[in-house]
Length: 164
Ligand code: FES
Image (cartoon, rainbow, N blue to C red; front, side, top):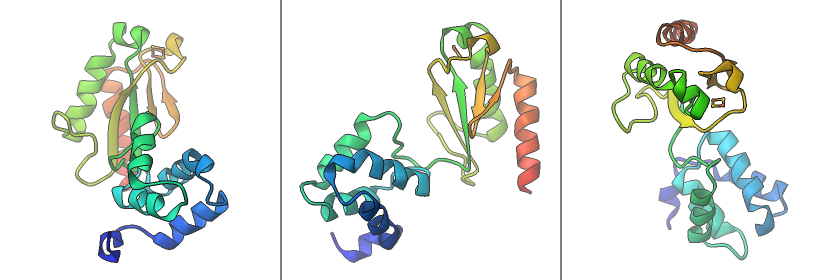
């Protein structure tokens, strides 16, 4: 790896995070969580850097850990992280039409997770433990209960307006 490969990541910031956890490989998950907080996902270059920098690790090990745990995203996330619950209760009460309404409003093509402007990312998640409020959408940790296609469009329009 050359230094050129690292232009997109802030190695000083990564060093700071590694040092926060004493550079111990037993703290790798906590380190990756912090890195994900900074970038909203785990950039490939950051994982390579950590795997190269920390004793007893390799980039392959870091990739392995990052891909094993569902909490880690290897793709960039949007400023607004939209999660549509597709657990049984939400599914039965119409989470799929809500999901499709979000895709249509945000112009997300099949397989595309994040909008081109980086503002929104969309994913489905399993039961959020709020089945009484189904179907549930969560945006940056805020719960939107009993969503409908029309209601979620209003929510998204409001967020888009605030961003303008
Ligand atoms: S199924 Fe969606 S909150 Fe439980």
